[in-house]
Image (tube, rainbow, N blue to C red; front, side, top):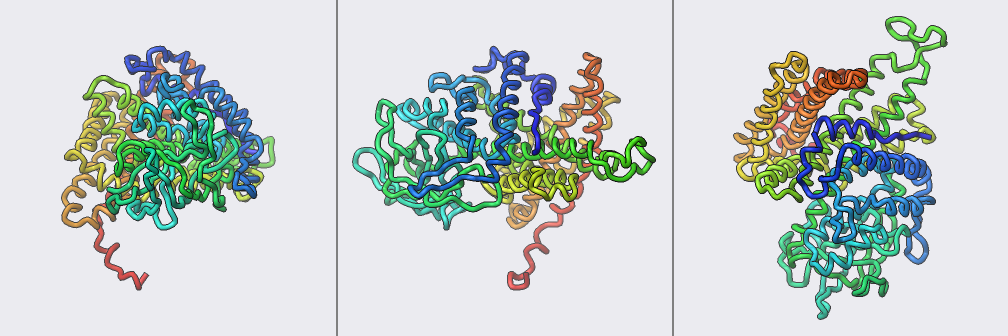
Length: 597
């Protein structure tokens, strides 16, 4: 059986030494968040994930969710008890405002917990994760009455939440949506239609499920401008919060899918179900994007999470598996063969995964801090800068993290050789589970188009220009430090590649949109590689300082510095390849007639 240990120490190093978490003490929820308190919270989070969630991962995958004859769904054995422990620990309510039953603590801590939970059991973690996303949309766009009725039981974990966008004929192009909303005359609406691919759509973990459903009010404009968002509870609550009548919503079937078997991915049928409008009519996408953006960051973390748990198990195997001898002579002469970790290609795979994991964790936490600043700061300029960074980086993190998370799960499986293909070792599950993250919440090609088509040109390119400025200042601040040159010089070259690619897009994409489409995927990964490189510069600087300040940490910090150099030497140079692809343009790609494919 595979194992998992939450990377609590690395997360605390990133928060305290790299991101300097204590700088945000003026924000609501941060004042009492000392390093000791953060350590206690994350240690407890890690313990729950290691002891309650990880042991259920393989069995949940093997047994899956079962749809019963009455349309109800039973989650895998042990999930209900684990969910109750998760909810009782306050992990769902962690970032929710206190007036709605939450703890009002930083979203950044919730981001860390989400990584631990997804690594331990990705299918399970989707139940509370989707609930947090639904809560975010509800608290942003719901009426005060709706927030008071729905938020506390969701924060408490008595009710869960979902998002319902996709229909059989309608995925990315939500303008094709046909689910109808007819006014009932009592202020509510009757919702009729079918939604597919609804994660956590039906289950027995909680007494109620709150579905957020996109639908079109009768007579609304065609296309995306006529879409509204509705609360459609499985059981309609009474005004006092007690449960009332069963609503006209049911699970038609559970999708048979490649992975995440422990999560019920449902076809949901709405047969005149009672729904309640959230926000303004015909402005549903605006409200749903709150949940979608939070979900995209959550999916980015899923990519990281599968990369991390796969790495941990591949590393353990590489230290134990005896095969062949080192090229430079036996390293374990008392044994019949050397552990495979002596072989350069095994080390290549392990270091590629590790170099991604540590910097990606830093980027995820930095994004979470930006979210906290954007939602909690009273400084308008700080909020704007954080929102710009978050808007720019969300599609990059979702796309890059999940692409590389899947690639890394495959690499970790490769370390196991034939055993990686065998179910009992658990590696093939990590590969299967990681694959969906590249698809849902907007396939990665869509993330790339969103980045190039919307996020780059927004406000005259303000966000990307700020990225360049921040990167130049970071590198300039360390350029005179000889110890930092192995990290600064490669990062400067990569940042230059990104600037050249951005300039090429400015000059060639407006007149010929296909150039933007052809470049978008490579640009997303180019920006992502540079962002990881800049994070490694920050990590290296913090590691050098910590090594000088705390000599007993020297070995651990040296390991980080070696990993940083590996990234700079072996992974960051990919930016030049991405740049070459971008400036090749779209002519060849678009010239082949469809019938010639």
